[in-house]
Amino acid sequence: TVKDSQGNITKVVLVEASGAAVEVYLYGATITSWKAKGKERLFLSKQAILDGSKAIRGGIPIVFPQFGLGKLVQHGFARTSNWQLLGYKDQIDGAKAMFLLTENEHSLSMWPHKFRAVYTIRLDSDTLNLSLSITNTNTSAAGSFDFTTLLHTYFLTPSISEVAVHNLAGLSYTDKVAKLDNVVEKNDPVSLASNVDRVYHNAPEKINIDISKHEAVLLTKTNFKDIVLWNPWAELAKGMADFGDDEYKQMVCVETGTVGSPISLAPGQTWEGHTSIVLQ
Ligand code: TA6
Image (cartoon, rainbow, N blue to C red; front, side, top):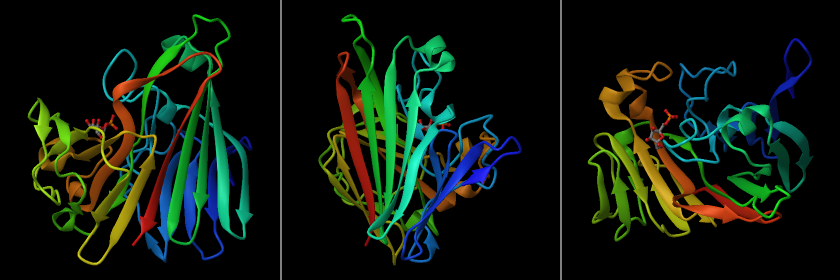
C-alpha cells in the first residue's frame, strides 16, 4: 500500500505469485495498471490526472450509478469518490483485493439513496477478474432505485490499426457519433479507423479482442448486458486536456456494462456483475 503525507492509503499494489500485478487507486477504486506475462496491458494517459481532482484517464474507471450524461455528473460519482480498502491477500492461487463505497455527503447531494458497492479484484497469472456488487441499503419501502453501471476498460495496443473486436456481428448498437439507434453490426471483426462511440446491446458473454497482430484477450462478462466500444480519435483527442493528441493510436475502450436499460433494486436487494480479461 502507498500512503499520502497524512498516512492515508492512496494506492494498493497487488502482486500475484507469477509476478502479475495490478495498481489500484482508492480514488474511484481505479485500476491504473495491470501487468501480466511481463507486459502492461492497460492504457493510462501520460497526462492522466492522479491527484483526485478528476476522473483518471485510463485503466479501468468504475461507472456508477449513471453511464454517460444525465441527472448526475457524467458517468456518475463512483469514479471520483474515495473508496475504502476492505482488505487484500496475496494468495497462492491468486491475489485479491476488495474495496467499498457507500453513500456519503457527496453522493447523497446528487443521488438520495443508501447503497453499498463492493468491488473485488482477483489476479491470476494471465487473468484479471473483476466483480462489482451493488446493494440497496435504503430502509423505507419507497427506497427502490435504478442505476446503470459499467467498467470503462482502456486496453493498451501498439497500434489501433491492429485492433479487431470479434463477436459483435448481428448485434444492434446505438451509434453516438452518427446519433443513430438500432444499427445492426455487419462487420466481423469490427475495426476502428475513426471516432467510434457505440453501445452494443445484449452482447454475448465472450468477446475476443485482437489487441495487435500478436496479442489477443478474451473479455468475458456475467450480468453485464452491453458492450461499449470507444475511441475518441484525433479531433476529440485534441480537446481532451488529460489525453495526448496522439494517444488515441495506443488505446481502445471495450467496456462491459448494463447501460441500455437501468437495473432496479428494491431495498435489501443486491445486483452483482462480473468481468474477466484473459490473455490468449
Ligand atoms: O466510453 C464511452 C463514453 O461514454 C464516451 O462517450 C466518452 O465520453 C467516454 O465515455 C469518456 O468519458 P469521460 O467522461 O471519461 O471523458
